[in-house]
Image (tube, rainbow, N blue to C red):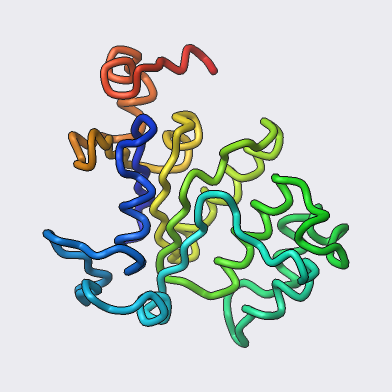
Length: 209
């Protein structure tokens, strides 16, 4: 289904490795990775992408030599739900910077560009690895709004997050990762309202943060 899932956990618990495994960037020794019933294990990354999975990697990799507009046109697909025009409406900041190159963008702008690029690929599933990292609070709020709209378009979301507020406001279900394994999962609301669970698994409580 398209119910958004978030995976949270302290640093070094294997969250990024999980993203890479789904994309075929690291080998999976046990377990099965499947999308809509099709097993993806062992496929090269480009084939996995073709099946409809888009990854927004940690650290927002953009090409320094390309302008924002070139980035978007490079991946735009005819007849896709997202077009460069729609990206500019959704992220007005990118519209203002459409002629700017990757190196001239702020961290927040690069992150918007990385997310927009993934949406333009018309994916069935988007995997985002810590999208809110290093972003100003006002940009995080905007990000939450955009991500919350994806399920209505039939786009699945797997969100890896350190920021508990983002995880619990975007996802319906939150899984907690401890040393490379999913220790437990629960409805997002339950985790958001339970400081004791937050402390136990994450070593933090949101405390209205």
